[in-house]
Image 1 (tube, rainbow, N blue to C red):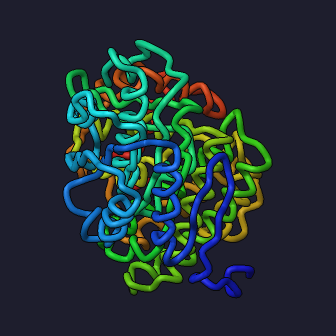
Image 2: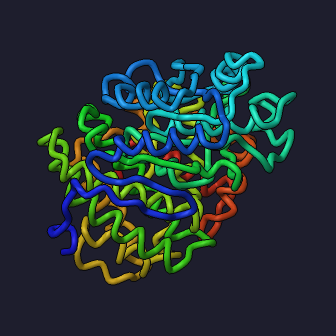
Length: 403
């Protein structure tokens, strides 16, 4: 296949809606980006990140001197948690405290990138807060320019217009999508991802798989979302075991990062539906639940639900996990079990009961799915019926192993 002939050390500029510096060593492009920011007359940036990874990954050792060399001051907010909250976004904005901040640099996985995008909107729209933003209180058309330095191979947030933040006051985890938060610059350097733990490596890669399964089967699916979806799954199935076995293997990280990137572009075009709509209530109620784990738990039941509606597409996508699927509606159970078995083989066999949920929680989870702002939009993209009974069935079928 084509991936066998790639030089992973060749840094390429990939142009999607934005400019993405991709490849081992891409972080060295930060100097070019900071010089461009300085040339716009921007004297200060807000850096949004988590507690540790921006340093432990090696990203900060490149970003800080690049800012200094470009004579750009920075306001550093390093309080982003794995499921970022509206409170954290507001705190990042408040830290600027009237300072002349003209751009945002977000460093981290999807959580930091999404928080950074959200702060970029609020800094360009003073007088509003994160709760208003995520509850639809206003519709932004402007945001500060964002540089997204991605440290995981999962969300694709560095290449799309989406962001997700939790409102802890009401256990809502809505999603926003605005053209103004496409990052203007992005860096995907697999060397920055080599320190991901085994667990993180699995979860973020499973996130990318979920993105394309949804994007390729949604009501807005296009030939692009289907094509990118098939390649994403092929790459993840091939390279995830190698990355788990050899965490420092940069070839594995390179192709997982590429898979996540094209998955982000896929769902930017094809959108998402069941798995993400139902996972958001899970991690809103249990913020300690990793997003990728929540998705993994739900995915087999989602496949079982939607396979009859999108059998041909799913047979193609799932071929690396289960060869011989013919694209017949009656294969739903086999396809769902194949995905469940693949997840277990990857080291992610958990079900909802394993992470603290029970059937007594299902009614609340269903209610949150339909009450949380924006999740109705995701459900409207689901193939087939997506009412409360369908959602309830997916939660119930995710409690334990499929028969």
